[in-house]
Image 1 (cartoon, helix red, strand yellow):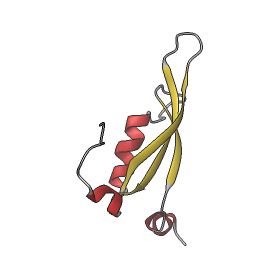
Image 2: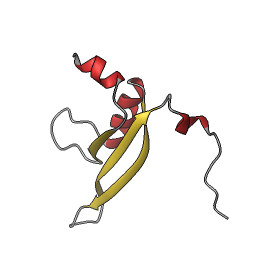
Image 3: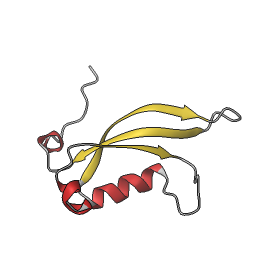
Length: 82
């Protein structure tokens, strides 16, 4: 099976993302979000944010992506804060 075909059958992608460039050409967290949206996925959750020790700047977070054609994204209402 080819990678593209596998991606179309994928139900969730978990990506460790960064707020800083960790290598030449590496993508930052928002660029990963943009890229995966072009592949049909949207971020649905996140966990384990890490902050740099020296200045407490946001460093890394794990993002969870699911296909945006799922019923989860059909609800257009926001969170209930009451």
